[in-house]
Image (cartoon, rainbow, N blue to C red; front, side, top):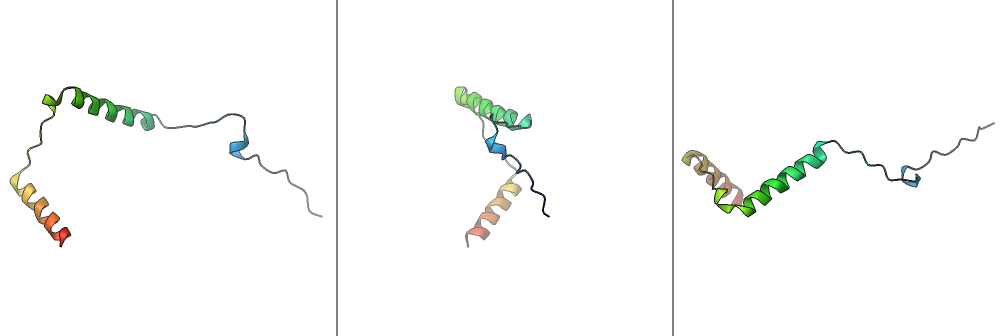
Length: 68
């Protein structure tokens, strides 16, 4: 004779919404937003990175290889 089982309550059917995020899931977007906001407010601090000519040559070669 089979024994009837009670169905498990669906997580969405509970009264409140429960979301558990790690600390970095909020910290990283806040840090990125703050950095970009600081660059927008003071664009003189945003300088282009200077790369080694060999690295630049390699990246151009890779780009040309991919575009074929």
